[in-house]
Length: 316
Image (cartoon, rainbow, N blue to C red; front, side, top):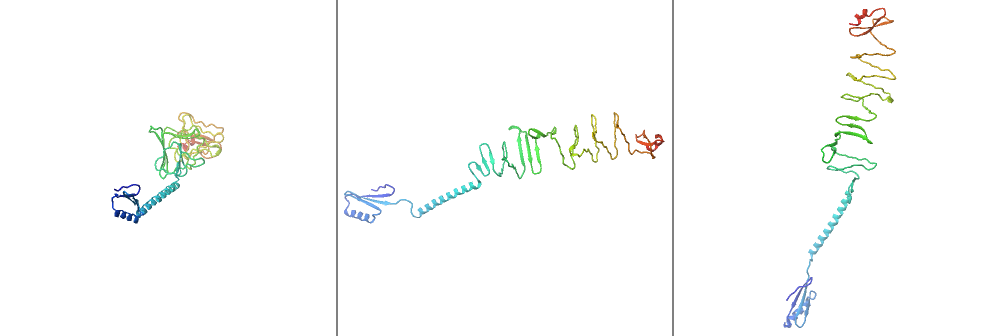
């Protein structure tokens, strides 16, 4: 009968007591020569032989197993080292990724950050005493909707050359005071001074409706209203007044000055009235003032002559 027990495979040999002495001696000789691998128990009735057979991985298989385990451990340390290196290089932390730092109510950008897609935020502001830079190789579009369900929107587009604003109304204000407002109906400029630093001046294709035009007195540059190459028309439903409170008013024309009143009088009121360079028939001394009835031309003749005598010379 044979049985196995324990971690090693033990072989038990049981012999009946009626076996011959020669068999017992054979077993004794066998166990004596194999004393290191087994033990034999003998009594008057039976003989039990225990043989130890080793079980496991031995030889080159064991060394291959150790080598594989060592290789796995080495790869594990290398991977851990690479992960730590990547965390240090990319500056990854529990609450940050590179220049981005994440908090419950905000996100801080400590440096340059590039966004491949869109950015949606309720507030974008710079740090104290620092400049907020928004840079793009293509266009920069700022877009805002009136509400979550509305299709009305305002768009500010920067394309490197132009700044395009698409909105129902454009306002520029400071401390709740609107200085500039533009809409399809009107444009309002509420600044104290409007300065146009252009050598060609301000060009307006339409009409200009103003209650008053005056110069900047502190600059001492005067006021010039000029039309180059074209006519200059000044009209007023209630009248047009040219007034100088401290000096004279000069009106000059290259080809003439026409004063016309369709329903009233033309009044020249002054303590001293001069008509210089009027046509005259020669001579000197006191002269008579004459007016042609056909064309209204004014001329002078000597006091000894009459206007009728010189009419053929000046009134043709």
